Length: 78
Image: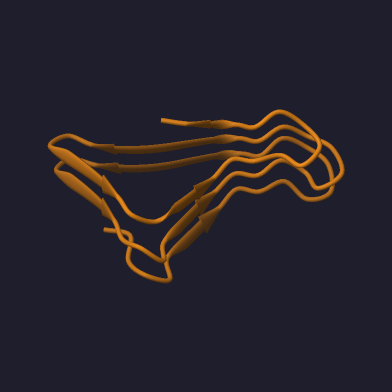
């Protein structure tokens, strides 16, 4: 469970591609409002990264996922 205030970040710095973030559960994955997963590209250059949210039985995403890139291609969310 990713609770309110939880944050996982694989953001790039000034340049570079965002990294990978994976939240995987063997049962139900609950991402509550106020939780954040981020893999943003660099602020000056670089593409967004990859975020995966998976659960064997069920997935509930009420939080924020960000794979954006201000000076590159947006990343992916699975």
